[in-house]
Image 1 (cartoon, rainbow over the protein chains, first blue to last red):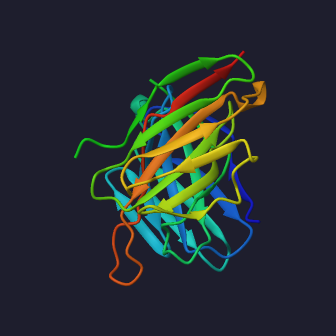
Image 2 (cartoon, rainbow over the protein chains, first blue to last red):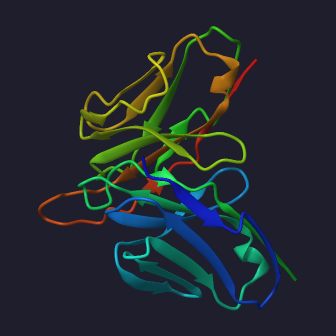
Length: 112
Length: 118
């Protein structure tokens, strides 16, 4: 069974700071997902990656397959970035289309 | 594209009653997933379908849980003889997955159904 660990569990930062959230997993994966969850439950997919690095706006996700580790970075953080960020992995053969195993999430608060 | 929808959004039931939730995926998506999320935890995977075929159901929490996707479009998740421990958010997601031809395997989540068992 794949274990997915995230750190930190809680993070409070000031507006404008560079944010890093880390994710490590225990067994080989086919894809890793970063998701954002706002209060009330809605989950939005931010990235899906199996190697290297992806960037979307102020968000950057990296993955190191050999070290079984991924990071999510937020540049120039803003209060609207406040949310729970969840790392999830897929270990199936479906290229990332199988059921996901989730970390517990990182609760991020960006203060003005 | 209207996104993934779930119905109802909230359900309060008494212990021992049966409940059924519905999920309507994005119309062209062939894969549909069910997850459960308890307070303060990440979601946990329950089951998924490719079209009408249920490809994984060993992660359903007990034999009280069952899911169907009879025509490969919407899906239902039923919990029989509900228990207080079943109180959680039940999330549905869909994706477009083609093993040979490639495709966008990103999962799109619905708003969830919050179940409270009293």
